[in-house]
Image 1 (cartoon, rainbow, N blue to C red):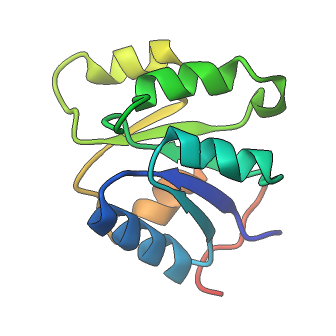
Image 2: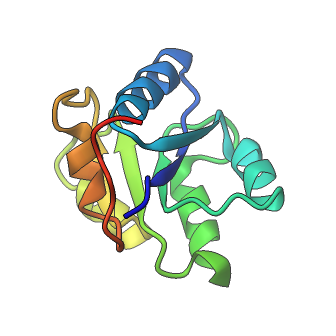
Amino acid sequence: MSRPHVLLIEDYPDNRVLVAAVLGDAGWRVSVAEDAPGCDRHLAAGLEPDLFLIDLSLPGEDGWSLVRRLRQDPRWDGRPMVALTAHAMNGDEGRGRRAGFDGYLTKPIDLGTFPTTLARWLRAPVELGGA
């Protein structure tokens, strides 16, 4: 088993801190980008996350566009991509799936179940429960 590595793309600083802390406490490795160019820099530097966690309302290139672009890159074929968003209107989750997301989670997150909920999209066994 290995510790999962997530790339969180989130523009709101408080959300970045909260998600990184919750996942870090559960034993995840977390890399953080505040926008699509930040995501691109991580990937260009060789980061290979086990899962992408993408906010939809990013400045500049939004999460809808980012997931479609990432899906066109063969390096990320089959890599889980999960939306983390405040968009909770009827039909938003279906739109997210059509855009290329494997999962769709709405804010606010459930602090107690968030790591386990995310782990269901991973394709390899993981070790959860602290570093």
